[in-house]
Image (cartoon, rainbow, N blue to C red; front, side, top):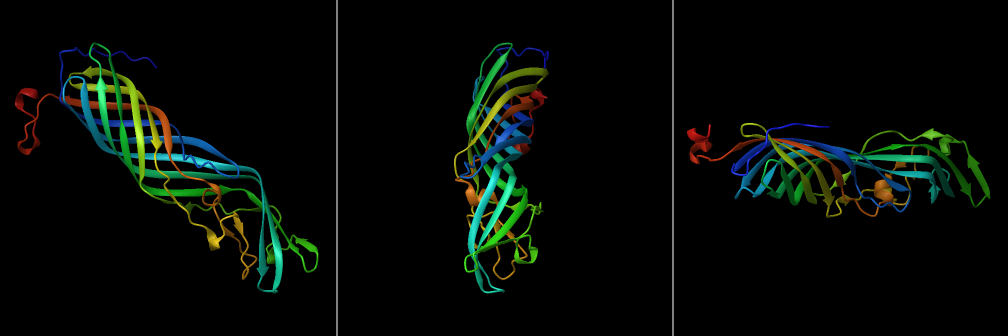
Length: 287
């Protein structure tokens, strides 16, 4: 896109900026799964901000934002087995499961509080760079599966494999329920950077256009698995073989969970030179 704006002179120095921002791009959760591959998806963020400038070039900013981080895990040919017992018959068996083209989508919604140090050049075209960190509080996070199960049971005592007997937990091409499963997340701490151009639109109103990058510093996943079984997405229930319990690939196979995002951001700001501390009013000469 091409935009034409009025220039900002080097002599102008507005100490305060209040802003509204929006951004979007690519995100992921850096799960590093031991089974399958991690995938990336989209991200979007929006919020309000405040910047205080020490001089025409240096300032510090904070605010409150809402952001989504999305990713997933794909397993081309998932196959596993579980040594278990059918308590209804009293027989031991090897429960075998295959899921071709298993896919799992992850989404985390967070409130983010940034603290960014900003440097900007002077002249008609202002280049700015900001760097710092963000504390991100999870609002919600969930996982949604997609795949179809084929299962069978090998009974060593009879040396026989049974299949296509749903009442015993042996199914053919049965869909995994596409229910959202909550993900338990800790508070996220991110390193963040932004680089772009700042231009004057009208008197005291600026537009920032830039690129941003967020990188999670800590593992935020609290693992939760069904029936204490961490190695299987589909878990056989000894007391109720016809009803499976499901794990997520995220809980079963990921090494970690560290959100990241890279994208474009736009920030519209209202700038002021002076501030009356009494009742937080601007002085008359700055209106």
